[in-house]
Length: 461
Ligand code: G6P
Ligand code: MN
Image (tube, rainbow, N blue to C red; front, side, top):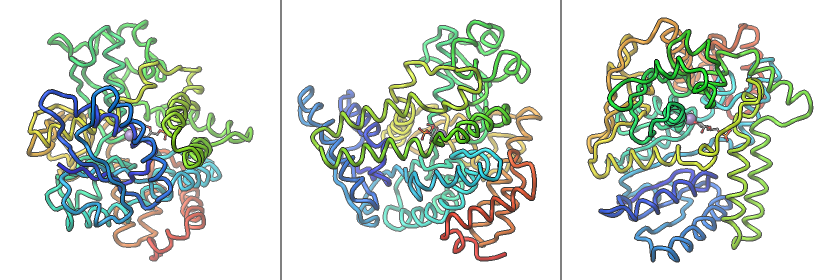
């Protein structure tokens, strides 16, 4: 089978490649025999190809020649033609675009974050036109392919792509699995054997059940102060709050539940002349891509160093706002993101049933939400795709947040479809983290100025 990775020059591609190489060693062999990396940026593609070459050399020394070829292309149609599976992991506007998403929001006095709040809306407005082009190109060049969407904001992008690709597009995120694993470890259960109940939208969900040894051990975890204090989300949200809601929130809910503190922490960093997260990553990645071009023989080492630095500093402002919550060593080694993608790939390609938390159209899984709204819930995945499992009704508070943010996503989709600035204004103004319509107008104006191409996306007043 042939896999195309769109955004093949992206920084996390070596993690996926490492997982694919690992897959070739499994009994029964690899599901994928050919990888095509597509990227519009030939320089990034070269740097990442150099990292992959070194991974392959190491693999060869330990296990012999891998039955997996890798090609790099800068022509999209050619990359897609004849492929059976697509991983879509693009970043429209690159990291510099992320910086503007963050900065315009911070200048307007609200949270500046990659996927949440005003920054996420801007990112969505910029990304959807490209995601829709990709979806159409996939439908033409690889109509039978399964698409795993990593592109953020992942829920919103998956929903927009699903209008073209229906249920052949499946969105993924590493954070539900990460949360489930940390929660399992906190009660001394084996994460690999545990089953997680989870419901919500991407970056807006809750772990509502933690099954190990045949029973739900979430109540026990919520009652155990020491266990809660032993992992990131337990410390981020605190025992009182997780008990009050009877569930463990995804780490991204810190931006909602501790909105003031989370915003203040970023604002404080920036006021002190410090970088936004995007600026931090621009610096890290520029250094990597430049050094890898100059020393391709050291590309892997350079990449691995930058990767570890990125993991260490992940969500640092939020963790500082919650009293210097540290990440655990297990979370620094990757394993989340690429593991979910590989698990989907295996389940679909080999028709090996798996239960995974994914982004798919709701189809009744969350009661009270439209059937075609993309949600993040446990799914049964096999050769026929991902079917969301019924999670029932959300609590009133959860449903309130989910419906509010889904309405924002729908306004973003409408804005891009119809070119309507009014719909874009509605998206900014009604987001739970934007507290004034006046601020929403400032945001829209600020983003239109920062991204001239948005004026083409949104020509209508
Ligand atoms: C997690 C999320 C991704 C997000 C990333 C940001 O992995 O699930 O959706 O893109 O964090 O991390 P970064 O290092 O780019 O700030
Ligand atoms: Mn994510």
